[in-house]
Image (tube, rainbow, N blue to C red; front, side, top):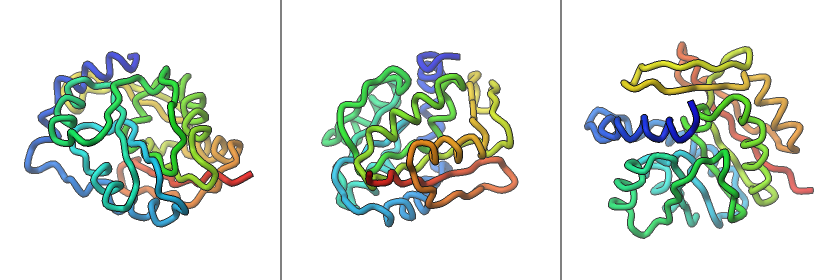
Length: 201
C-alpha cells in the first residue's frame, strides 16, 4: 500500500479517535519526556497528527509553535475545525519537501505506515530538518528484524513497516543523533518509542 491509500483507509475510520473510550493520554508521558530534553522551543511538527490535537496542544502549552502534517484529508478537516489557529499540511511525508527547520518533531504511530523501502530516506529527511540539538520522538514496531505486513485490525487494510529496533538505532547513530530514550511501552505488544537528539556539529 502506498501512503495515499493509507490516507484513504484512515478517512474511513476517523470515528475511532472520536469515541469516548479513546485514550487521549496515549503518548503524552513520552512526549513530556522528550520535551524536557529540548534546549529551544521554536517550531514543532507533528507528523501523522490525526484529528485529536493532543500533541499539538501539549507543544503549544510548552511554548512551541506547532503545526501538523497528515495524509488523511478527513482527519485534517476535523483537526482544522477544532484548531483553526494551527497550520495543517495535507501531504505524504515520503514526497513532502520540509519547508522549515524544527526544534521538535513527533511521529507517533505514523512513520510505521510508510513503505519499508522509504523508511531510511524519510527518517534522514526528518533529522536533516531538525535544528542542532533538536529532538525527534517516534514510535515504531519493536521487532528484531526489518519487515512489513498488512492487517485489518482497525477495519480497512492498513500497511505497517519497521526497520527493527537495531535498524533504527544504527540509522540514528549514523545520522549523528544521540539516543536519549528507548522504551517498549505497551508490553507484551511490540510497540516501542525512541527519543533522539540531533548533535550540534
